[in-house]
Amino acid sequence: MSKLAEKLIAGEFVVTAEVAPPKGVDLDGVLATAACFPPEVVAVNVTDNQGANMRMAPLVVAALLHQGGVEPVLQMTCRDRNRMALQSDLLGAAAFGIKNLLLLSGDHPRFGDHPHARGVFDLDSVQLLQAADRLTAGQDLAGRPLAGSPAFFGGAAVSPQAEPFELMFQKFRKKVEAGARFFQTQAVFCEAPLTRFMEQAAPLRVPVLLGVLLLKNARMARFVHEHVPGVRVPEHLIDRLDGAADPLEEGVRIARETVRLARRHCQGVHLMTLGCEDRISEILC
Amino acid sequence: MIISRQKDKEDLLRHLEGKHKVFLVGCGACATVCKSGGEEEVSQMQEWLVSTGREVTGSVVIDEACHIMRAGRDLRHNRSAVGEADALMVMTCGAGIQSISSHTEKRVIGALDSLFLGNVRRLGQYEEKCSLCGDCILNETAGICPVTNCAKGLLNGPCGGMEEGKCESDRDLDCAWMLIYERLSRQGRKGVFARVVPAKDWGHRHQPGRHKIR
Image 1 (cartoon, rainbow over the protein chains, first blue to last red):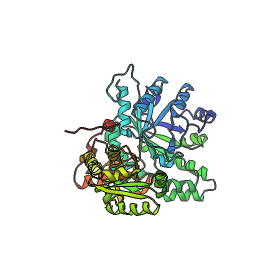
Image 2: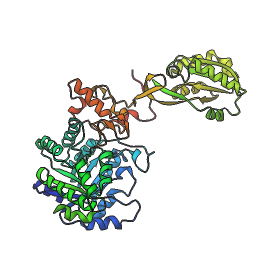
Image 3: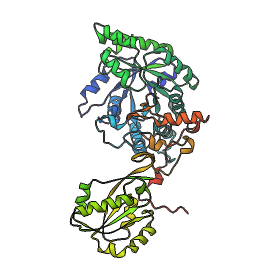
Image 4: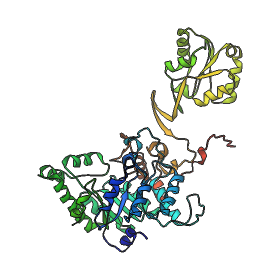
């Protein structure tokens, strides 16, 4: 069982963070970043061509992290591979000892650096969760038996503030039904929508790690508010960043408050610090 | 209906190089409705070909050019005009073009691009509605096809990119899942949200397809 699974099952408050594979073959940066996460960070997400921008295969980076003693959460999207490639990569991940997965639909190719690529989406995120679950049960999606089965701990994403709430929640419920064992959320900054979501989610009894995004300045906060689906940055936080002598310092303070919010409502946090990984200890204290 | 559009004249000229006598074929079905290959367009094409110094040996608008036997019969009825021509210019969808090319060894020049299976809102304004996937779940989605109308073709609900009911790929488009959800709600049923839809059977789309339904 992964450390992430153990701690979540034991009911401990869990912290995850994330790194992006390099655009190129130079791994020094990503490996150095992953190595300097404080010990509170239980597992590190490795993103999969995030924002539909082509980068090194996350499976390889996750394997290297694992070998280096950092527990990875392998992100996998449905955008770039059909069901055969996805399952085959999942089996490969198991061979490296990777257990934690975050299974996603993936951003539309239109936004990335290969906008003319054909999106695959042979499976959707719910079906990819089913596939991982089936593999863990010793069968592939076609019902064929496996020679040795993986032991995955499959997770999924949710946007607690997406509207309409009920539509978002029906998808969330399906992900749980399809085998999601934990969730990492899109960034949330306010208590009211989080409370509403966590109340509705409670009967499904699946741990939720609150997405904590480090806002570096007011401009970034406004951009996120306007352009990232399902994320709302309240005006008073943007004002705080705007008026701060040191906006990054203020952003760390806001992130710290959000972690406290998570301690009251959720089973952990997923930190998105975008290059400021050295501030994680402060955010967690 | 198959939505089609005429190719650029420049493109047609390249294919017409060295072809001086042309027989024209239109279609009385989709291409007529799209105003890309009906009587009127065939006659305009004839005028244009003549203006480029070519001779049009004859023309026919077939009821449904995709009907292979009917297309063969209509070509036989125009045997001598077809025989005189250096090439046939076919103003039909891709199915029609292949229906014609299966009946002649002459050069067939397709004059249209087939765009998609869709509906007409008004002339010139079309909506893609069906992907011909052969595994229809419209009965559970309140008659709105997510395979075609969702930018990712998802089957279990919206992606995380939905924002206030709009699509991630184009904020001017409604999220298909939002439309499905709203209509199902109005009908007081859960539809596709009542179950986890398993991985789709794309086996119906294996190529090349040859289907015998009866």
